Amino acid sequence: MKKTLASILIISVLALPLTSCSGFGGGNGGGTMPTETEDTSETSEMGFTLPYGKPSHDLNSVDAKEAFEDLYIDPIDVPWGTTQNLRVVSGNVDNYFVYYALDRNDNQVNENLNYISTVTKPSVQAYALEDDPGYIVYEVTYDQIFPIYTKQPSSVYTSFFSYHNVSFVDYYTGRNFPSVNLSTQIDSFGVTGNVFYKGEKYHMGYYEFRSQEFADGGTQDAGGGYVFLKEKIVIHSTSYFIVPEFYRGILMCVFVANDTDTPLSEIIDDNSPYFVPPTPFGEEENPDDYVFFSINAPK
Image (cartoon, rainbow, N blue to C red):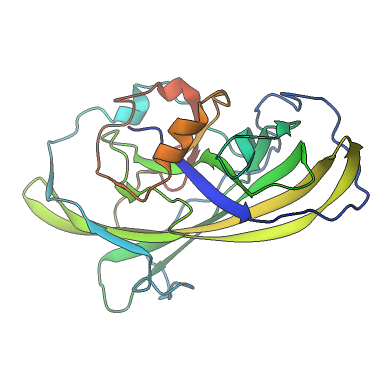
């Protein structure tokens, strides 16, 4: 699976106001190593008989729509998830992000003093759709928290931060769910298509919505025309999966390897809403770079 990055545009300003803020400490590369930070109980098993419900987002109103080609799955004797020694977690997870402040020539002019972000434990609800008998909607909500702490000029042209999209993979086949890369251009997508298994045809849909919150922030004079900027940005995400009622195989994947040294040119090149088909997970990277949440897959 291609390792995808999402970018969020923060500000395009000529000057930053000077206000007091406390520091994180640490310096370049500071913060703790990514780890599971909260131990909570596992999501309870979903029953087959569920009340009717309605998504809180309009699934017909997304920034990008895609359809994958008919997917034919061979009979499965041994589920992929039982052969991978996956690191399955149940609490919040720390991982990495990078904040960029640029001048008018797209040169990075800041020094990051924190790279550690947090993905919260997903909350899962399941319900049936009245107009789609035999299918279930799994609504998955989670936050990604970005404590930006950086030293930069008091005047910058633009700024943004880059992080890895959370992704989802099928426990049985090891194929990633088809998706569209979120970027500074889009904040939602919908992907639909048909899956054939043992002579039966099933449809599925995967929808993703995100919104951005400025939780708090401020600057402090660092001398020499520089400031320390501290901001906490929270990305609220909601995922929807429309799948057959018997299906139990959704795993949520969080990339936790440290790739903060990725060149800025690669980050900029990756900032586009490209479609990722349901290719095998780990085809282009190492599953050991991830931790996994069970959304409705076997524990």
